[in-house]
Length: 316
Image (cartoon, rainbow, N blue to C red; front, side):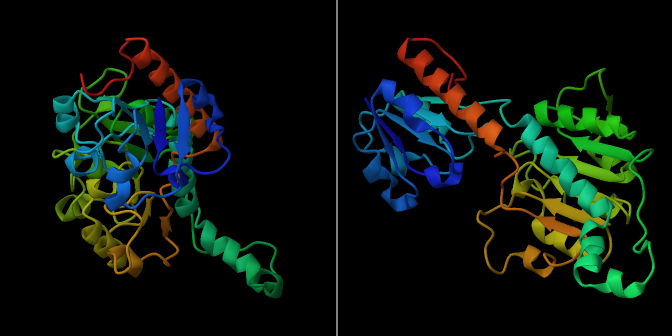
């Protein structure tokens, strides 16, 4: 059994892939250019991928391929219809990164709400020392307690964010595909109109692409903080950049981009150095504990597949 990881560089350091050796030979490749993926999969039985695109072009010569394990929850990089046609099983992993992503969501929101960059820069620059004044309270900041936190996407991550927001004393409103009595469920437009903080936790689908667009940005409060912890294309990125530049919203944080890595000339280059903007390199899912959980789940997915059981299959 030949197992190939074509893009292990995207998985970070510290993982012990020897747990997979009981299934066969494991080939760990740091980075494989997309045009070379077909070559490395030629004699592969099982592929474990994160960002590598698995489509007809990359899979057409993978005659032995039986299983694709996605080292993630989202599987938009895999052509599920083609895999189904070829009889290639596809598994993902759910729930492993809930706490990791929720933690980054709040880190971004708190950093922007507390003007953390401005305050730390004031100390680092020596301005605090030179001031001779014990306290420095500009720019003005506000407590989250009593504010409205709007969550778009009420799955595992959105639900965890809701719990934390409530612990901070926020009123929480949620938009989710299947309304639940657990939350105050409202429309996306109402979230945009009412919320002081808005966080995005939805998968990328035709329905969610550009969900936050110029029209919805206009509905937001000028003080609103928008956090994207979903997928880059869930927002109209150019419209978001313009809203930030023109003071139409109060702050913006994102860990995700429509094309990754972030390309030179992207609209966010116009805003990335602003103090009310927080951009990170798609790291929110990847706390060490979350990555270990994901690898352990992949081990279980492979074991189940080889024993004829269906586990975390997204192709059936």
